Length: 176
Image 1 (cartoon, rainbow, N blue to C red):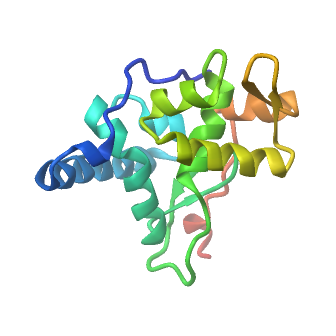
Image 2: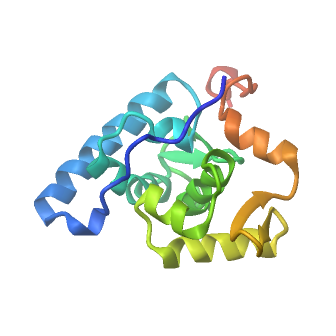
């Protein structure tokens, strides 16, 4: 199963009023919790189906859920609900980084500007995520066209395929 990029451009979260932000944040939290109850999902699978204003609040809300220890990144932009509460330590992940890397795998001609516009993230946020991924060797920049790509095709496939077909240990069922 392949996933696709959300079709609409997201509305930036910081353009909403405080009341609108709270409503959108609550809606996104409910959406993410419900999806992760069914099993692990990739960041773009979680983003799918959100309205433009909700999509703009997605990375912010995902970070709140991670910080609370409610969800965790399992690698390659796949998230899962944590089967225990509360977390014993702060979970380290970066939803913005995961969104940017997923966008590289899914957006046609992934330039910093295209990724920024598609995800309603600032160019500064996208640039920081791209520089980090480039410095660790995950992605490669092509100066002739300004596009990014994964250094290894296998990694790109993992991001494109999301959580489908992966095996996740049923930790809660094993009494751990």
